[in-house]
Image (tube, rainbow, N blue to C red; front, top):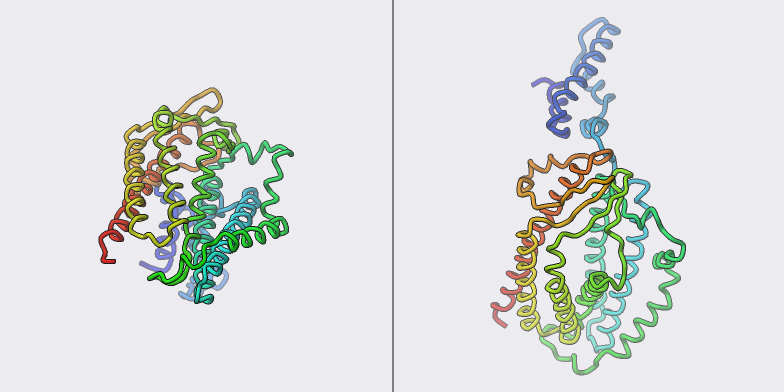
Length: 373
């Protein structure tokens, strides 16, 4: 394989399989014509170094392949970046408040190792921050790639803009001070001393989970409104409605979320009761696996209505193959059937990943129950 073949093979590996041959043939003709033009100019054959110099002018294989690919060239495009930035700023500030409350509670509980408490607070903050930024980026990348725009991004109202003050550090200054003060005032003192794992209060590890699940419960009960059902696909309005499975499982899902909040509260009150918490978490994970199986078995999850047509988001086991992921078509002006197929593949993988995650959670907590004290 000569230099040109190696270059074209590297480009081809980055291209969709159904377009690869045509694009590589076109690119090969372009490069050969540049080789011939340079040889005619010099009056001799090109050396390997001169050929490589021309390939450098054409561009790196990753960059060249990107020119031929459809869809966005970035994970978060310029239209979505301001929303991503707001979510990152507000989320990081919330995490900072939670970490500060936890650190204050550690100090108030009589910790003998202030340096260790600070290190643990920073470790928890940065770990949660990376998870937050990863989740935001993944969500924005999916929205960018498939040109999905919830209507609350495009049809906003002025009286709903006060929430954006969450990204202003000045708005959080007083709240952070009050939160830390109340944590110090209400934290237990000597009752937390002389523990086998030290004088650290690890309850802050469960506070963020309690808040996040609490927000979900409020949305699930329609107390707060996040209009995820109104979306824009390829600049066309669409309405997403749930399948009957969500009505059937409404109460079990609510009870599952409330049970998780209860375990978080117990963990806040009794952060050193490791075995008891592990037993509860095994039960919670088992319930989550059952719910995941019930949703999977239903097979029909959502309906999408757009331009007078309706399509269903359903289980598609054909996507449970990494090569089959290439079936996910590009966004843009795709029709409703393609949108539904794409979302079916994404939802199928979400449920599989959820099941694996819950299974790992159950195994980890079973190990905590079984290991010697």
